Length: 140
Image (cartoon, rainbow, N blue to C red; front, side, top):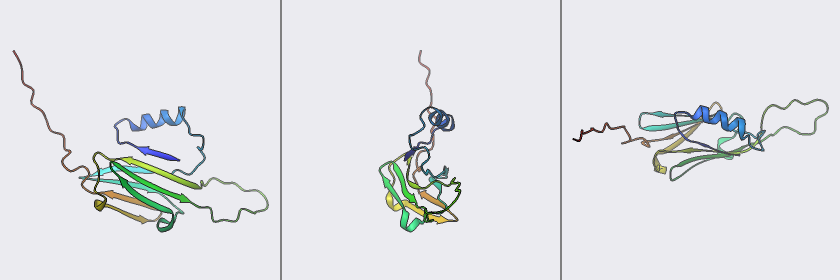
């Protein structure tokens, strides 16, 4: 499953309608939750990946204006079980994509994994993007 995150003021409303009207066919597939925010000039993206081996099963890439996180949560439990089984944990491959305001320098991207959370920081991606007020002149 591929998901693209675009930073927009009404993203939650858009996501609600998109989820309601256009649910993907593989809605039961694993899609990690994401939290993307600005921290000064940096973009910080956090992905919930409990039970995932970050060194073996996750890749982080920058392609122009996109930060792409791919991976797979594998079920290591034995499938041959007798009796009842309730399965709420989702497994499978995933891809999440975050649209950046400008193309990022791959040398300024860092990633760390702690307690089931992957944190990716794209440094200086907001540098020089502060809003500037434009003077309005009155014409006769």
